[in-house]
Amino acid sequence: MPMSQELIAELKVLRLFDATTSQTGLKVHSDADPELIAATRRLHEKQLITLSDGGYLTPLGYESSVHLQNLLQILTSKPLL
Image (cartoon, rainbow, N blue to C red; front, side, top):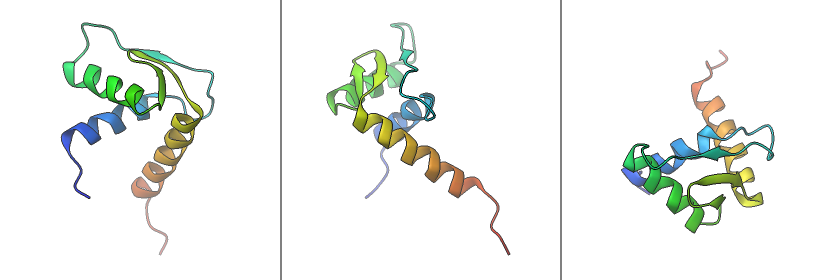
């Protein structure tokens, strides 16, 4: 599956959430980068976040955020030789 710019933007937004707690939200303001605003809306449509301008992670969004953080940690760590 190719990684479109839209998908990459959505991953960037998910990465902004704190994966250690579901109690921390975020707000994307109307003067933010249009790509960020659109990605946030798409995540809301996919039911990963509670509001179209941010809010909190849904249970599925929280699980996705944790998996994303784990994947990024794996991909950016140095290999054990």
